[in-house]
Structure formats: C-alpha cells, structure tokens
Length: 170
Image (cartoon, rainbow, N blue to C red; front, side, top):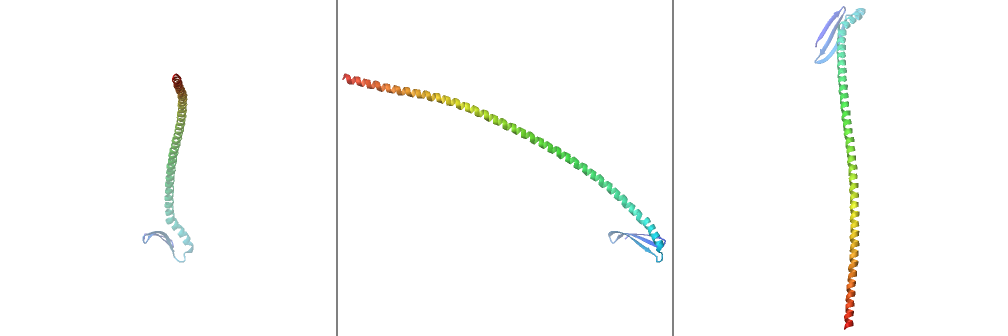
C-alpha cells in the first residue's frame, strides 16, 4: 500500500493509492477534536494540494483520449467512405457489364431469330420449288401413263383386227 500524508494545521490527510493488490484510490482525512471551523479551511487546502493536481492529470488524460478517439473516428470514417466509394464503383462496373451482356444476348437472340426466319423462308422456297418439280413430274408421269394406256389399247385393237382378219380369211 502506497500512501502520502500531508498535514495542515489540525488536519492530517492520507492519500491511499493501492490496497492489497487491487487498484484503489482514496482520501482519508483525520482532524483533531475541537478544531471545527479551521477544519473546513484545512480540508480545502488539502483538497487543493492533493486532489486538484490529480484531477488536472485525469482531465489531461481524458482530453488526450478524446483527441485520439476523434482521430481514430475520422480515420475510420475516411476508410468507410473509401470502401463505400470502391463498392459503388464495383457495383456500377458490374451493372454496366450486366447491361452490356444483356444487350449482347438480345442482339444474339435477334440475329438467331433473323437467321432462323431467313432459313425458314429459304426452306419454304426450296419446298415450294420441289413441290412444283414434283407436280411437273407427276403431270409428266400421268401423261406417260395415259400414253402407255392408249398404246396398250391400240395394240389390243390391232390384235383384235388381225384376229378378225384371220377369221375372215379362214
């Protein structure tokens, strides 16, 4: 235990800074009996001599801590602002990339749709041309069939006439 003692007139003041391993600060004031009015003045003097310097040092420490915390707060605010700006820039970059990608995919989709439409139209034209050729081939085949059928009927008729001629000559 560390103590400081001061005496002023009829008063003895003991300032205790540590008791049994624990941090403890206290002020013990003892006065002699019969010194009522001078005790108040003596206490004032002792308080000014012992407590005022301690209060001043505590005030200085608090001011230093306050300045330090303000500097840390300003540093943190600056870092947070910087991080906020960075994240906004990243977000804007990502949004721009997404917009660009979206535009590209829309253009690709439009191109694919146009290609499919053109291919469909070409396919339809080819089918129409094939259908026309098939119609021509079918007409030609019908004509040839009719010709063949006519030719077959003529051959029968010739045979019939020759039979009739042979029957008549017989």
